Amino acid sequence: MVFLGAPGAGKGTQARILQEHYGYRQISTGDLLRENLRLGTHLGEDADGYMSRGELVPDRLIVDMVKGALPESSVPVIFDGFPRTIPQARTLDTMLQEREGAVPRAICFRVDLSDAEKRMLGRGRDDDTRQTVARRFAVFEEHRQSLEAYYNRARDVRFFEIDASQPVDRVTAQLLRVLGLDGVRPTTS
Ligand code: AMP
Image 1 (tube, rainbow, N blue to C red):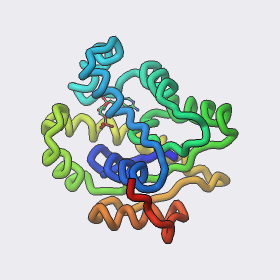
Image 2 (tube, protein in one colour):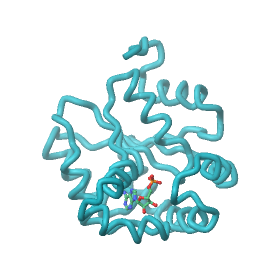
Image 3 (spheres, helix red, strand yellow):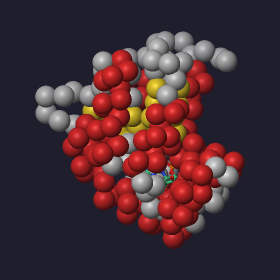
């Protein structure tokens, strides 16, 4: 499944909870890029400027990186922060069709941008400055409608919305309901 929603909506927090307790694998393009920056790889060097300006890293780089990060097909994956553009969404559909003959569900995290900004400025990441945050919201808005429309097509019921302004445990409860996992006991590992 894919997690859609503004930067700071809590997608990463929820993806980590589902990874930790419900057998999903989180693939966060932001985390993968930051890891590449830290290790000083070519990809990290290429992505650095875009990330520090709050712009999107080019689709080609992102898609190659995601392909390299896919686990074997029996593991359910949460794509967190991906796709962010229509070409990325199309490529993901193709990739998953080939891999497992299925297309992903989309979970849309709804949150007021003022709440999301507060969360981001509280977490202290390098690209969480007031200026970059404003640019990242603008970039998010540019792509939001078309991405939501891509997943929310009339005959294609794979789009779910959750209220992400609530506290973490409430958002998790909504997610579990949407996924049909309420009542399933979390693992502790
Ligand atoms: P995030 O951790 O998801 O907020 O991503 C941090 C930064 O990484 C973004 O501001 C973009 O510069 C870059 N990034 C992460 N995911 C993508 C993606 N799917 N497409 C393009 N750029 C991305």
